[in-house]
Length: 210
Ligand SMILES: Nc1ncnc2c1ncn2[C@@H]1O[C@H](COP(=O)(O)OP(=O)(O)OP(=O)(O)O)[C@@H](O)[C@H]1O
Ligand SMILES: O=C(O)c1ccc[n+]([C@@H]2O[C@H](COP(=O)([O-])O)[C@@H](O)[C@H]2O)c1
Image: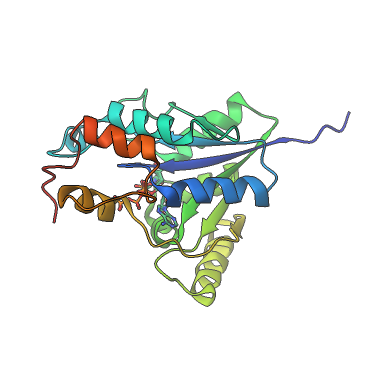
């Protein structure tokens, strides 16, 4: 029988904290690529990066993702990278998922800034063999620049890189951490429940970064 493969998007990130940029990317990918679900997958932290001053702990990052995606039936939380010790490389995660779900096509979603570093990731060719990479623009990267890097990587790794039809979303976790620290509102950049959570747990108030 010729059954269509299931299509799963993966929105991986540090999510410190999860913001509207991540949510919009997930929803846009869901719609554009007719995905069955988008899995939000918080990345594990290397031991030396855990419990940094003023940052969210691993369990707080997971709680915030759970809260932020709760109202969207297209989204699910995946903890597979949180249950490992230290950093989980994307190629390992994807290869594990491919063998666990052989009838599923995976779409790994990332922003343009991550794509410019993709070459330096561990085993990029193996990532390309395991998924389609979905790229969203960021930091006002022009279509021309994005097309160029996508074309280069496609050629180098024989991969499949596709562009997300999304607008530039000027938001980053770093910016929001500094806004919380400065007592500036983050309303509409974060979901209300995540804003409440950050306030209740006093996260980012004495973050060390500038
Ligand atoms: N505003 C955005 N537009 C497009 N892609 C984004 C945006 N924010 C995050 N991403 C992408 O989502 C993924 C996870 O991002 P991450 O959790 O590191 O958030 P971040 O805002 O980049 O964090 P930080 O500011 O701490 O570096 C990455 O691939 C990143 O490129
Ligand atoms: O596997 C790698 O070498 C690798 C290097 C950098 C980032 N990633 C993945 O890319 C996603 C976004 O990462 P970040 O650091 O921008 O939050 C997240 O799922 C990370 O695990 C993966």
